Image (cartoon, rainbow, N blue to C red):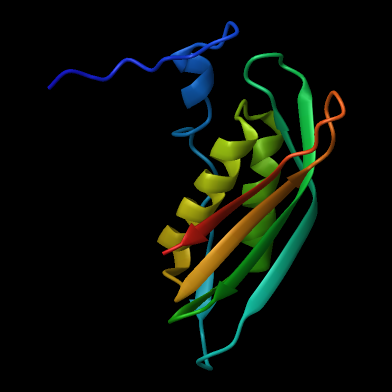
Length: 133
């Protein structure tokens, strides 16, 4: 099967677009949930990563809201997972979607939303949301 060629513009390559998507990150641990039907919101105000095109740092706040099923996220491991992004080249959009995917794999929540609110660059501020399922 042929691999589809990604179209990019403004000097962006497929390598830029795919940067950070499959890099190894620390495992997110869980613990057994004791109650059904409630929501957990975790705010991480010191998210940082590296823009894969410019090499400059990106800053933002990651907000995770989820309804646990059988497991809850263990906060120390989540913190170590998020801090691992600080040296990772990854675009905002990919980071938010990767975080959601990794959280869904770790705890299989009833539902989850990850919101990334990123600081302004060139007078533009981005807010990215991804939802599970």
